[in-house]
Length: 344
Ligand SMILES: *Cc1c(COP(=O)(O)O)cnc(C)c1O
Image 1 (cartoon, rainbow, N blue to C red):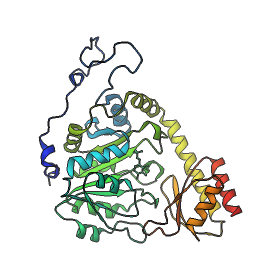
Image 2 (image 1 turned 45 degrees about the horizontal axis):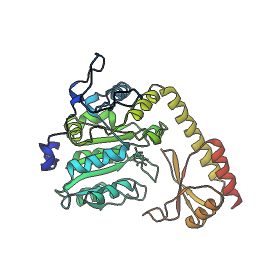
Image 3 (image 1 turned 90 degrees about the vertical axis):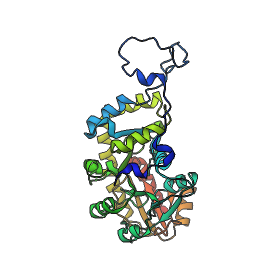
Image 4 (image 1 turned 135 degrees about the vertical axis):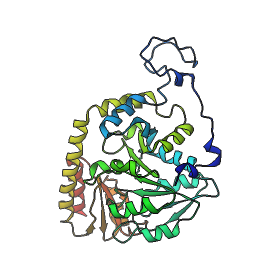
């Protein structure tokens, strides 16, 4: 299968927007830039940012052991996902496959782009139902979204099932690894070379503690990254974001320490939740949140709001009846949550 056959006709031979600066990437030599109608007076951000974000990509490339050509950055992973729709899904014709209960953004993006969503519900232990997924797929099924670790269930998908889908699904398989850094399971990044139809998305919003800067990362074959590059807005990652990302990526030790603290807190929180009688089930988690089943999700949700604690009520999602999703906070925040739950 050549992934290029999956690309929309109008995108295949598109002429990307070309900024004059693209041709002068060597920023070290002294050049006079009178090409972009920028204001010449220095504000630190008076120049357009690097459209290819080379410094950020260089760091990611070294840390993840992958070529910069296999990396595409976006304004959050939400932009990366949207680019995938625009590259591969023909409005009013193509469809995508999602596996509820999962991240709501896939379906929102499908709606915005005029794309139908085929939903194949996860098995009762929250794993992909491979046979049903392949049965639901047709020639217009362009994207299959696997969120692993999955939001809101928290679990990772079994390697065997994912491998099976990568080999058998005849479209692009997007593995959303927003929570991978909280998991003991390996990223699919190690196996990117094996599957030309594999797209992995990660983000600086969760484990890296930078939701505010909006930086999403896409890892894929060069065939795919070059298509996405040809349609992305030229300056989609702003200068401030690039600078803050570089600073953070150079301090991986701190990131690692925070992840370990969150994982310790996760264990503590689970132990405490086990003591609360209206908590009926605590689902296994590889993420920085935990899904629990309670006696009455709406009631417990409202009670917590009244006490000033906001969590996520997932009771309306399939397989999540009476389920609440709790993000792991600081030890003080988690203690406040537990103390409050104990008073209900
Ligand atoms: C939080 C989250 C993201 C992150 O999106 P950004 O746009 O990068 O902030 C992506 N996927 C899932 C499943 C998430 O839960």
